[in-house]
Image 1 (cartoon, rainbow, N blue to C red):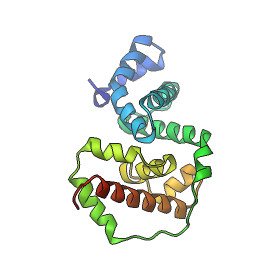
Image 2: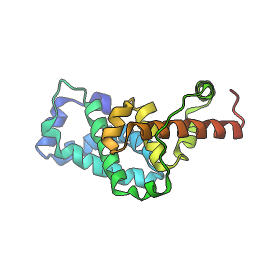
Image 3: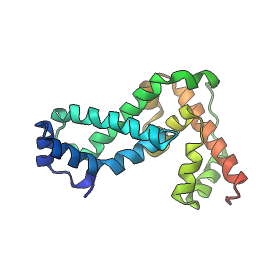
Length: 185
């Protein structure tokens, strides 16, 4: 069983603080939530810590859940917000990044997409995981999670131009790493 098979009865039992139900929900949601956390963190241990913070927030807010919204989407939003909150706490990474407000789209980015399509998921995740933390966060939010530049800008408290810079930087960096590791365009 996984997050796709969560019944309203299980959610109700969790709202009533039944420990077995909470553990069952944790088991079913763990893989999905860990996948989200791993995209945004450097280590598995850090991902596990943030997952636990996020799961606590999920349990604490279950009474606010509306069944007409898919549960998977609801927990995803909470987990991404927890990741953003954790990243804000550790803003020390931002001191090493110079923000550029201009963004240039180039032909090489469409070539990057072609190269990424020929790679396996583990290789792609490994390369994305090596991006600087803030660039990785913006890249994941934009490319993987589908947020717009405006949404990312509002959530992370940066300008739209800066989010575009992070996407441009990430694509250029990934293209260079793909070439370095010998993946064909």
